[in-house]
Image 1 (cartoon, rainbow, N blue to C red):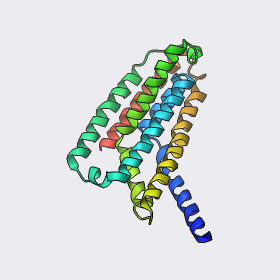
Image 2: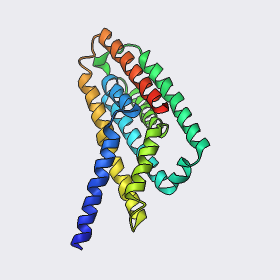
Image 3: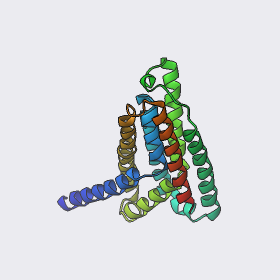
Image 4: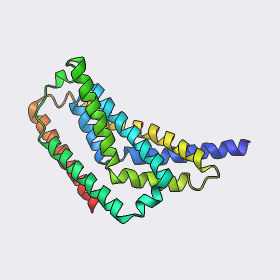
Length: 212
């Protein structure tokens, strides 16, 4: 029993380390999290993080069910790759050309408006994650390492889904928190415009690297 507990502990640590590294490294989802943290209210930033994290957990679950078929189907991979790139380029343009906002009013507004913006941010986080090829490849690599080799693959799959959800909340959330820390510095319109353009360019470069 002690040996089994030790093995489970090692598996937890391995899964957690892998998932956190995949979730916290720079990429389209995290660049947008930084932008949401800096230029949106707390509720919208949290909604984005939740949407991206739950969506990634869903990707991990799907990879456990039939990831090998998806990744071995060239037309499906090409379709997902270019659809994702088109959407992310669109977001990069919107980010770079975003108008200046009053930073002091980020967490204000009516309840209905805040709720609508939160739902929009949550949907954007979920869609960005689904259309991010990096998410699918990292998820399938993790499934291959930590799930398929286990005696009870179904239990290991749900364990990896849970660990991935927590890691994504921490990883994407840390970028959103970094953005929140920048919010006061971005109060002058000139800095805000420069930040928006820089984030748009960084996101576009991430997409180009992904296509390369």
